[in-house]
Length: 217
Image 1 (cartoon, rainbow, N blue to C red):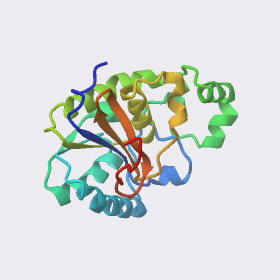
Image 2 (image 1 turned 180 degrees about the vertical axis):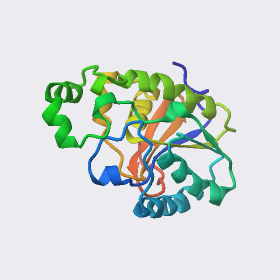
Image 3 (image 1 turned 120 degrees about the vertical axis):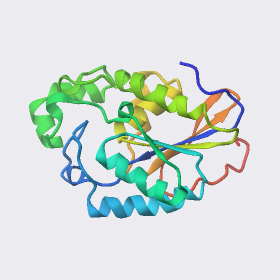
Image 4 (image 1 turned 60 degrees about the horizontal axis):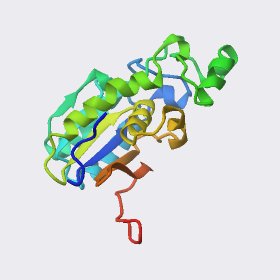
């Protein structure tokens, strides 16, 4: 998959939604449409104030309530319309959805272990991680390609979808995507365009990016 034109300095901020009740219960949400808690709304408002300082040029979000509500906080500050796209939804995980972490391990232990080893697994009979990247990454690139030079796109999505999208844009092998680690609620990762394509500049951040001062800038 080709990235946006290299060397133009575009930036993609991939922002995870705020807290939900199922997050607190360690319950697998997947594509289930769960709303933000009051804490989640507060997290989104705080993060939006920070991200607004980046002066984003566009916002695109999953159409699930938790992501849409998070994106709305940034839209209110920037005046941008949010483009909603179902391709940015979280991984559909079939029978896993609605189960707690402990219930998944108890009922689907071998499947869970294989997933953690980086093997291609249809969790609960749902999507493969590569299929999530197949639907989400092109949407992110489509919107990134519309940015002006040095423009910033904010993508509001879900932890699993963000991780797989980052892995695809960095051209990592799928078995290595898990090594990126998760995102906390309302934290984000930043990709920047360089001469050789997309680079991971920030991961699971909750503050504004700082310039890299040194030999690797």
